[in-house]
Length: 157
Image (cartoon, rainbow, N blue to C red; front, side, top):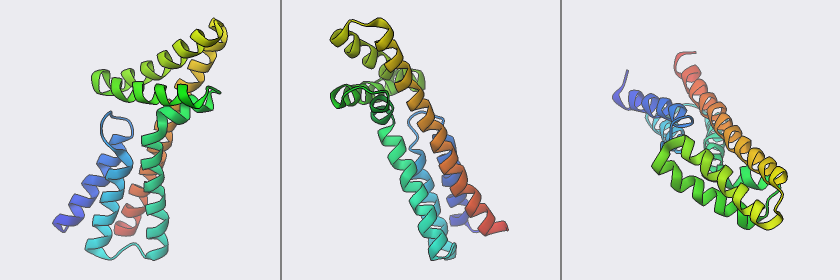
């Protein structure tokens, strides 16, 4: 196997790993692996390449926007969602995935409780935001596995 093709598969595998490991940009690694593979082999064809690039770019967007989208989907306002995304991202560097989850949940709970003094509603919104972040990680796994699987199919299928 060509060295660049092997490097492409390594990047694609890291993309899948990055969807569950902190600080690895899953979508970006998958996109890089796909483009290195295409550059070296000329495969996949234009239509499949476009579809796979679209999936990888979607994984990048999901990765970058996970905290914000998860919080926003819980029904909080944009200011709270942005704060939760920023705190979760910062705590990701300090405590890994647990820091991300606690940062999003804690921020949503604290801001919502400060505004409405309702423990139950604040906890519910924090839980929904946390589930949204977990769901985004699951979506990244699906997207990066599909990109890897398609390239494996093109190479060996």
